[in-house]
Length: 407
Image (cartoon, rainbow, N blue to C red; front, side, top):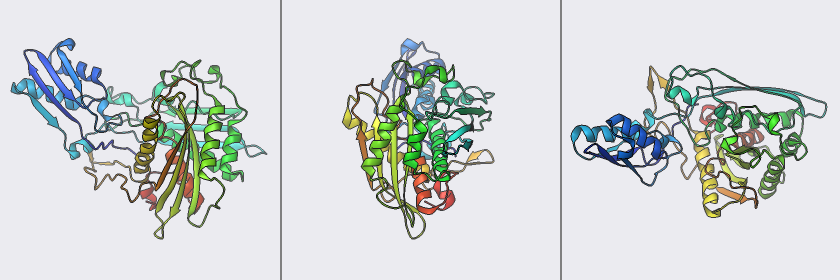
């Protein structure tokens, strides 16, 4: 579904236009872009716009767009006075730059050993480019490279496709971007294949990875962007996938308690922003059939970690953030208007529904530093949905879980 950012601090900016110059204070993720947009809106030179970046108050990608700062600058120029603009919660949710709706289709042929001999995956979603060009309907290489064209599994015949989709609202970046829905589809499907083959999901995913290897750049699409990282410095290394999966399953006690009768464990692995992550989620279903997340174990190989405490915070927060979007996140429109306007219609995780325990296991590595802010999000939802299947026998092929009466 479409998702809103719903940062705790809605978009806010203060601008003072005076003598052709602008002093601006804004919670922005994109000060250079904000400077350029403000300069164009008020007819000032770029060098005459000063952007003072404040604490963000939550952004998740929404505050990469400068619209609220432009409003403050234009109003200041017209009024001749300093102007502070603070969007209401209703403005924030109804006029967001939404995370895109998406649909994925996957199928595979299994060999005698239960491993796929052929794997087809198709994805379609309105691209972010549609926000800037209404005629854009095809994702670019950067979006397709966010967890879709870089599947690490050793499959003899693999094909990844992307189709056209027209946007009807503004589309923007949300924490981990297209990895959110790509990881959900791929790693839910891998779990389905494991059960179809009669294999333990952990053992099956390890088998899918095949022998430890560096995936040659030539095996990836020519336009694969690799998160703008040099591929020689940041190659796709299946040994690092294996390591995080083994750590996460060991720390979580994988296999020590039998799945079923309302208890389940699920797993997923994913590489995003050059970081390797494995997540194991444990769930219990309450008497009403609602999911309760008992424990989350996340193993992280982000290369050389400069600030371990901050890394822990990012991945702990990612578990709570991901619980919100997996269980409740859905934006809908009717007659051209967004139907949700506040937390009553777009709820976030509360303490009562948040994971009871979140354990983050940082892998010691001498590899170059990689991302920590976004990689915790993609594997969480498929791990959660796989745990729900293990507990109930019900497959989750559509989100959020509230649609199925599971949250």
